[in-house]
Image (cartoon, rainbow, N blue to C red; front, side, top):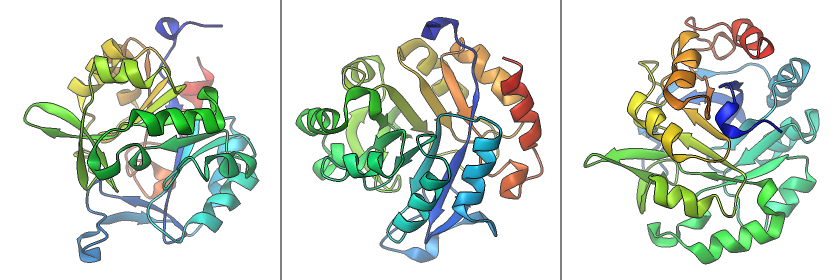
Length: 262
């Protein structure tokens, strides 16, 4: 098996669901308290299953389906059914429903908010959900926002800041119970103004398990930049800049070709 240090950074696809539709949303604008703050870059006419079939056709493994709020379960199961064991699922995952989502076709479950009751990290909850599905089936989402020069884990659609700093020490603890990390840089998510280079560089130093970064990617060359900054330890997700999501900066076909060249 190839070691994490010898990896090449790859493109990882995504399906973000809001009200049952595939959308691209500007990070941090989705709020339960004030729906008027929502800023949407793209709403797909295609179904979630259409995107899943597209990713399956091109062998794009390790992609994630994220349920942003209620009303997305049917759409998520539709996507998972279109590619059984080919996509990860996140959004509202806890120790009670995690195994059900694996049974519905998810390759792995992604968890954030459940781990932070009252915005405080619970090691006990991490241990419970890891035991429920197994370490190999669990992805911990440590999506974050900058606060006072640090990256703090943000939950509840990136609205609430938790007590956990994204750093080597916390990632080492989390990696004992999961097989991957997913990290959205919420402050740059959906803006197409470039990745958080400092965060990607730090992740390259800190992570020892497969890690996917999302947020701000706006050019094909960003994948090479992520590879350079992280020494291949971090993969990259593209959103609003991508042509299949209404963008005009990056072509899906080019990313597929880049992955196939590895």
